[in-house]
Image: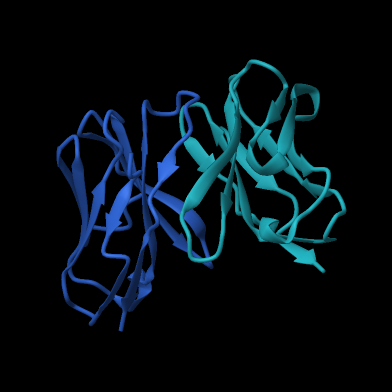
Length: 110
Length: 115
């Protein structure tokens, strides 16, 4: 059975410092993996997706994620946080079902 | 394209009333999903359609919930009768194909409050 685990429910970083949001998954097959962002009172927006091409995936707003099969991870990173990055981030795994992680709320400290 | 359009944005209703949420998917997308989001349970998939046909409704909480997709450009989620525990944000999403690497485009959601 597939599953997705976001290891941190909250992450706080200072503006201008790197961001790391962690995601581990389990899947019987080669899954598709996604990161979505949800700003307050908004819908979810696709940040990036991995679909068995390049393992390092670049998304919007300077985010990227690396698929590591040996570690079953798909962590989301950004070199330098901006205040506008404050939001909730969801890791999603999709093979025969679509499973959302519980979300990680990113706080940016001035 | 205007994206996935949901209406209403906010709905406040009294317990026992019928509630209908509406969704217009992106033109050309053939998969449509209804999700519910609460603080306690996060995002839950309620039902999804492929080519207007309900494929998996195992996430629908109970018989009070029903969903239809009469054509490729419109879907409804109905709750009858509504209860306070149904209060949540309901999202509709559409995709070019189910689960197949395309990602999903979400609407802005309907915030439902049942009092």
